Length: 369
Image (cartoon, rainbow, N blue to C red):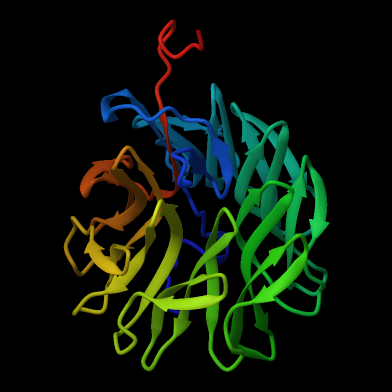
């Protein structure tokens, strides 16, 4: 995907984390988590991605407060791309690689549920849990090698596109009875032509003109408002933007040298978008925008690429998951209010694609009277 890092396909990008104006935390693209907002010292931070256990690379992993939990035994590689935490249950979506293809998968408390098992590649890109229902967005390759937009509800597949275009998904949100999936459509006869889009209950809504190259990376639904983050070609390269109910708002400099988006969060009247923007040395720097104001997160040398992949906002604290290259490998980390907490060991590749922050439960304290 043009300027994106080699170690991670754009198709596996992530997730949008949203917080509704009523204070409920939303994780992994739209599943409401009833959280009583507490102080930061009473929170648990969950980050999903991949890591190395000292023996195998690219193990689907999530970290709870910095401690890694491996989702495979290491004999099968893969990635975790989205996470939801509800009560004591941890849901993680991603993929497991096997020879020749990959399996779209989600895990509930470490137990794998395979969503697509066939002769072609399939991956999961987002997850939402509403009541007893589990929604997972993803992609499944067709016989002719094109990616078909998908979502699964309780394991039942729902196709969003045909096999005539290349149409990956990147995120899912569920609001009431409505299911929203963000992605893009690419013309295989013109790889420089793609449109940002999302589907509402299976109906496609186009966001960008067809004479531009654009992608939708994440989605958030707050009340009747639909927010979609993405990127689109500008005068020289990509610009970061989001669409609110179809109206575009530019974030990065349209005259700049390039940028990409990853996730969107909406908290009251504040809109956060994460991603990366090229610095003066043309390397991508982890960045997020709050109401259009750019905040740079980079803690490594500016000549090394990094990405802000996902965001959670709780009790005024901003948590952003991502990774940066340390000159030797990519290192998973998250930032709390701009301060970096390292998750990877710094000697093997690791990445963080999703984050969920919830109030910690204390016996006898958080129970209802």
